[in-house]
Image 1 (cartoon, helix red, strand yellow):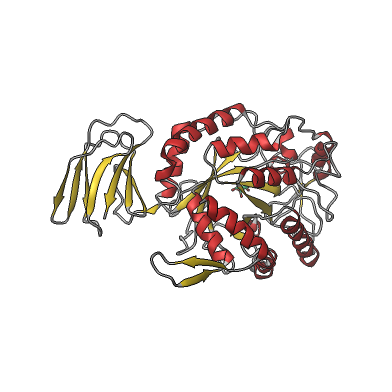
Image 2 (spheres, rainbow, N blue to C red):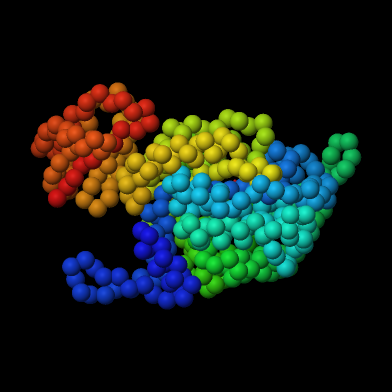
Length: 448
Ligand code: GLC
């Protein structure tokens, strides 16, 4: 995996083809940097999402300009007080790496239009509009490259500040009167706005080394339009793939992936589910990597009052459940305005890291085992091994249908204790001891 990362980084930058050798054969085949990056991404299984911007200063989440019905100019003045004096990119990245994450996804520019990087194309940015004047994105990218994590960049398609963004469902200017009457007069100029986005994306892909993915969001701002809005995605995606062939494209548009997208995103739900109500009718796209994003608490950006963080057990189970759907989990943290990660988030990262350091082997590089959905938990497969993640502690035996391969041995992953099992005509039954781990109990099946 490490070799894969170094090699893929090199190839991504050089834009060449990667030779691969089929095992046992001398024949050389080639794989494009894009296909290589997709494969590597699908194996990573766990990333950290970071929603950070000037909104953290209000402590009300990243939508506060909108939910607070704030005048955009008044809202934007927060930038002049943004001075995250305790920010240390290396410390953050080390904490993510120790948690077992393989990549981070950072908000380069969110819906409020504030750029967390040095950009020529808007002065509403971390260098020109804050006293901090440090390129936060640049520092995180350098730390990721140094510590061997990939960096992905979230990029908002919509913008609540720029007058050339064509008004959608949400970018309302609020009149500064008692009722906060919405003003919906902005005409927009998509040619101008599209050029702006292309310019910024070019900066992102030419100044910060290898970028693992661009993660778009906000397409749904135009879902209510009478005629479909033409975002010109084809051109945008082609630009990304031209600048960095190994940079993957994902779009959180809540529907099936379209041409040019390298992975499919599911917001707050496992692929195929719709408990959060954002994925109605979102079919799973075949044959591309999947990613599910979820927050540690209830909000993406820092929300001071939301201390309701998921437990370590819940976070770990999310990783397992996502893997069971062939998806990565992108787990979100909203950093504080002082530049620190919330203490509760750090605590959860430590707990996840402890678990991943013991059991990561049963997660990274796996695919969902093609076994029928089971009540007891989730089956993952890697090479000649099948890992049964037993989430229901009351399980005393498991019946599996016939496996394609011959079973060599069955044992508890934790202490290698061999387990009794019986082969039947159409499958096998495994007999379990009393299960004690409240998070997960793993049984390994080795096949020939
Ligand atoms: C939604 C929210 C946005 C957040 C994103 C993360 O699209 O509008 O604030 O960044 O979800 O998945």
